[in-house]
Length: 597
Picture (tube, rainbow, N blue to C red):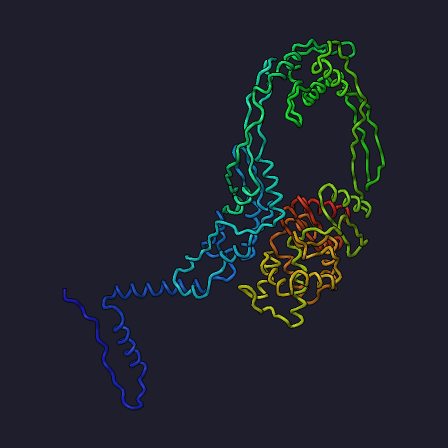
């Protein structure tokens, strides 16, 4: 079949000022089109398909949002594609909370959550890796799939005193002393047990292992450390003398009676009372085992003792209102029994019957606490919960009866992220003075976006950058004190930034009443305090509408809030150590039950 040639467009020339008409333009375009395109039609189809595909890919890449996780964004084993930036930050925080480390040292294991070791993730850096898509790279087809958006390890910073305390605890857990050769009782006979070596590691070994390990989010990181073997000091030959003493004790004729009734004793029972100890000079001695004697006394108490009853005390708002006395009991006088057994089994005095004596016991006191729906009831509850749950609490009703109660509210405590409220206060003031605008550049973004990162996502870099721009920690202290807050709020504390429940409550009262912030600044901060993702504490426990700022650092968990309850408005701050947001929610429910029955 003869090969078809592509048609040639007629060549048109123009003279002078003659203007080509539409038909001539189309002819020119057709001539140019066939000059640059392939001869065969299916080749032209391929070119057009490729062009449209690339154009579509570029359009998608240019249209992809600036503040959402990239299509392949992943943190550990969890996908973060298309997540808003603040949700990505929450994912980092949640995954970090689940991350643990485990020291494996010989046959010992020490495992803890990483945050208890003083670790804090660089949340903003992790979020940036999963969200940011440079503008110039959007010109490259499929570059959206090349972004390093998959984060398999967390960049961390450690607070020195916290990690040192954790490592010291780990050293004690995974190290153990050698076990010297001891006398062993089996089937009523004395046997010698072989010595066993111990193991020890240094704090530097464990610390370097942790700092150099790859921290993968949401899993338990296993760190193997080789210990130093510690040999035992006492061998079998050292036990010959006490062995003969123990054999004599085992064959001693022993009679124990209670109220004239003899107590049946087996050789195994007597043997269990014997133990070897070593004095400061390393000399081995045969002694009585206090633990085994306590067990024997407990068995006697089951048969011959009398259990003391319970005295129930009813306490209302911290004051005793009723008491029901329980009966007294009696228990074996273990000390007297120990003296007699020492004389016969250890000292080798002649055998004679041992009469068990008893000591009186007093009833157990049970306190039944209740709290009335009064200010006294609320204060009593706050007092009790601050002691039993290691909490610092302050509550101020802004209407109604205007109750004000507190417990440990003025204690200076690591603030966690609540310090960002004070940074926001100075930021608003400087913008109002015209020193900056919301479009001013900072880090890789603007003041506007950085504010959301600080108050909604609750990441640290923007807050720390502003502190640097505002003159540092000492300057921030001066600013905070100038606004009427106490020296319990301290940005220069060497361990961490500090504040108090009283200062945070004062801040939130000023925010609610418009005396601390007003206008657009107040509206903006309140918006951030209502849309952040960490609403498991006061918002979960309250029946009202809540604006709150949380803080979590190591084992500190805080929440400070403005609450519009159906029956009134109040401000509450709960700063806790070793607790959880679920516990804060539980306390909130009880507080509202007392305030608004």
